Length: 170
Image (cartoon, rainbow, N blue to C red; front, side, top):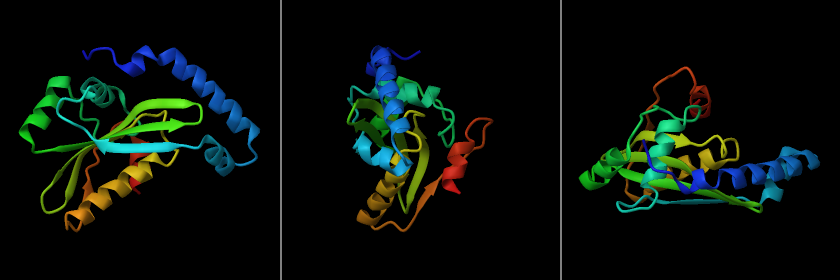
């Protein structure tokens, strides 16, 4: 069991913000107008070993099903071991819009040897369909180019619920 995260403590606030987003969406003539009006900011950064986000990273691996390429479940100690071993790297993503902060909504855990090999790629359903997934994959491509690596491989293991992840890859 993971400890309570910021997102857990803010759950009521997040639901209120979601209702404001729905009202805005319903007032817009087209989906593109809605996304433009949201003024979304995607913040992608490296996860750090002593990050206050370790609990949330573990929580996302345990709770995210639809947009989770492998549904590899990890505890906080599993995440700490990844950092300590330095074999894997981690990207975390936060999302904000004009109404507020969605919080930490995505995680990628990967290794970089002769290419980028993605072990874990997941995104909370709160952020799905807003282009965040495309930005994350593009960031992996940028990392590969910066390091002179010629490929990005994303592992996918089918489950009953993660079809949206496969559709994104296709």
